[in-house]
Every structure is written in C-alpha cells, then in structure tokens.
Length: 173
Image 1 (cartoon, rainbow, N blue to C red):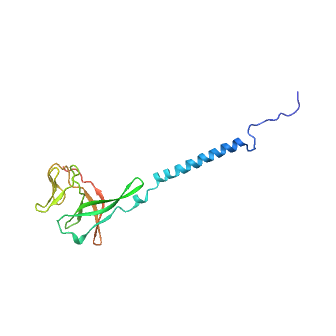
Image 2 (image 1 turned 90 degrees about the vertical axis):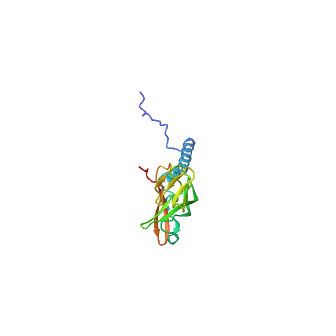
Image 3 (image 1 turned 30 degrees about the horizontal axis):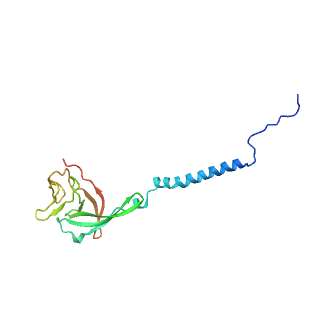
C-alpha cells in the first residue's frame, strides 16, 4: 500500500478562467436587458400616469349666461388618455339652470346615441333620428329612448360652471 495521502482534485478551481468570465459577462448582459425592459413595464402597471391623476373637471360656462329652465348648449375641451398619448377633444353639453341646482346633459340620445336639439317652441329636447322626446329635466316623454338623458357631474366655483365625469342614467321603469 501506498502511504502517500490522496489528493482530491476539484473541477472548481478558484481561478478565473476565460469560460467563467464569458458566462458571467453573458449573464450580466441578460440581467441588464431584463432590467431595461422590465422596469418601464412594471412602472406602467404600478404607477398611475400623470394624465390619469389630473383633475377631470373642466370649465364649461358662466353662471351669469344661464337663464332658468332654458337649456344652453356649451362647447368645452377635455383631455382623454389614449394609451401613451393625451388627446384634447372638443365636446358639448346642454346646461340647464334649475332653482335648486345646475344640470349638464350629455349631447347623445339614450336610444342610439344620436345628437338631439332643444325645441324652444315646444320646450323639450327632440332627437330627430327616431323621434325621442325629452323634457327639460331629461326624462323621456315619447319615443324609443329607454332611459332619461345621461348627465355630467356639475359644480360651481365662483361664477363658473365646472363639468366632471359622465354619469349614465339608470333604466326607466
């Protein structure tokens, strides 16, 4: 028998070889690519955009322009987020001043979304497409419209009427 101690050889030497350097470099490049692509995706999913954090209220009219129980069609601009773009759109609303509050109606008929108008002679809103008729308070008087007119949330700051998000009216019974 041989009295020499056996030496254990290891495949893992503490020396930095070319192969280990190449593998470490490739893994480092992969980590950098994943971080470069993943960080914006995670930020997009977890952090709300500035456009969504903005106030949804826009100035639409002056209270002094409004005559009680007489609708006034007003045009205003509202920002809409479309993916990464913020688009400024022109929109309209019918604003009516009542003794207790001010109401702003969306400009589309609740039947098929056609534009309606105010008939000042008969004092009601008329949709010319399918002959729906709405009273000044937005309720259906005639026609195929299934529910009252949709309304924007409104509030008054000083002498300005501000229009907020659209609230869909509930189905009429």
